[in-house]
Image (cartoon, rainbow over all chains, first blue to last red; front, side):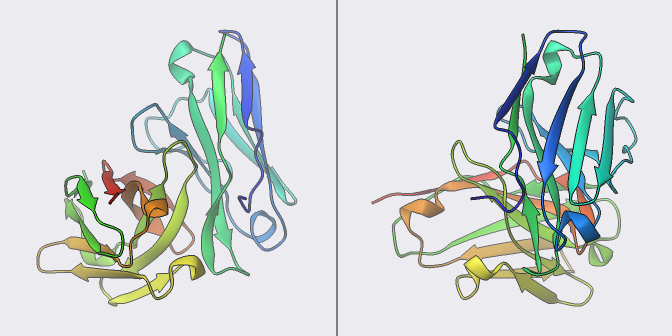
Length: 110
Length: 118
């Protein structure tokens, strides 16, 4: 059971937009920055979003992040087949003194 | 450009230990935080612990306390994760990553598959 809650799967057609939610509590998302990671099949995770809404160099602006209260959201616009991957949210949990992740969301681009 | 290169796959017997290495190239190794994250087959990401090489201080997730040891050798820019008393549930890909201490995991190693089987 993951500390952060994500939907197991989402899907949308190419060119469309999708959002992935990540729900937590005041001990994690509510008081700490959220990051998002993309994991393509058979590869290591890759940082997509950090500090709630910042993109590392090289990440297209089709990817966006937001946070409100104890929830965070990853948005992806202009979906491409290459976006099919597992997406994870992560943050620090002050009560657990540990980094915590969501269970992951599998994105299917139909 | 910082890169993290991990050691190769391991097959271990239940009850034994495994030690995985993570060598950094580029950047200033000592100033990083290096974390270890594992992923069981078909499962999500699980943080195990971290080390700040310049301080030599490691912190561990409660679940792994007493079974995991994370160390760093500044002279070779290499971090290590040793997991003892292995059981089948420890079968997973183990990743090292730069980050933790409230910083994002921005650089990842390629992963090391550890299989625990009798």
